[in-house]
Length: 86
Image (cartoon, rainbow, N blue to C red; front, side, top):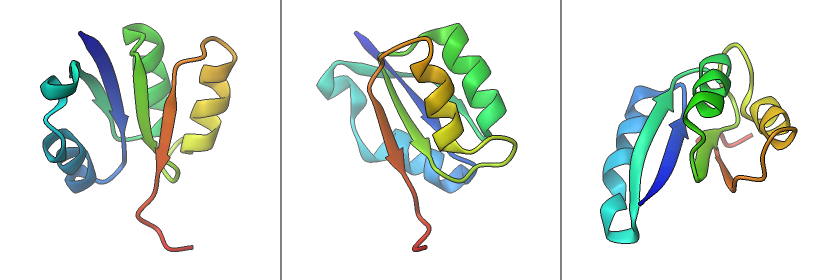
């Protein structure tokens, strides 16, 4: 089974990402989540997921910085999402 990590500062967005997709149908399990960038980076390094889905704008550290730091250590696929229209 593959592991996906979800990062978004909006609780409703995390819940939607968890429930919108039946992850197990695709061989995935949600292995972790975070509501800010610093927390996300720490947990991603610790859990070593197979896929990361991250918001762009998060408190503490934005999603792009998280991606840059992850890229220094790993080539895990990252999907960037945003609910902002700007």
